[in-house]
Amino acid sequence: MEHEMRAEYEDGVTPGPESPVKIWHMVRFEGIKAMCGRILGESAATQPADLWGTPEGEPFCHSCGAMYLREVP
Ligand SMILES: [Zn+2]
Image 1 (tube, rainbow, N blue to C red):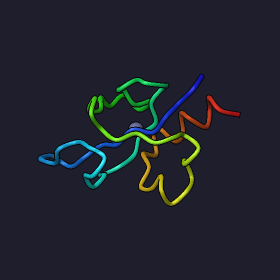
Image 2: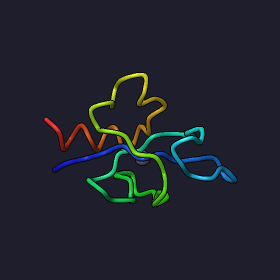
Image 3: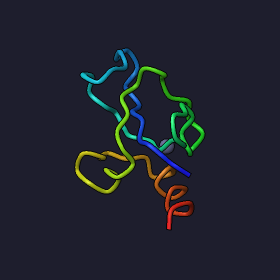
Image 4: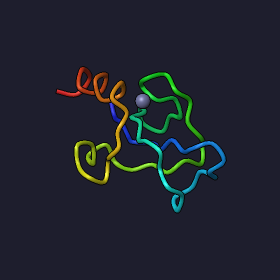
């Protein structure tokens, strides 16, 4: 199962690579539904799952983190 990180934004912020990220979620590859159940914007920024646990991946959704840990050895 491949994963990537997808951004959530504050209300009123236009999703996009230049916008400030409220929190990062983990989605299954190319999806828009986070593992915690939240639906994210199709134009929201994404980054590789490899950045999970690094400063670039903060702040990160705790629910997604817990689910991701269960799927990835
Ligand atoms: Zn999440």
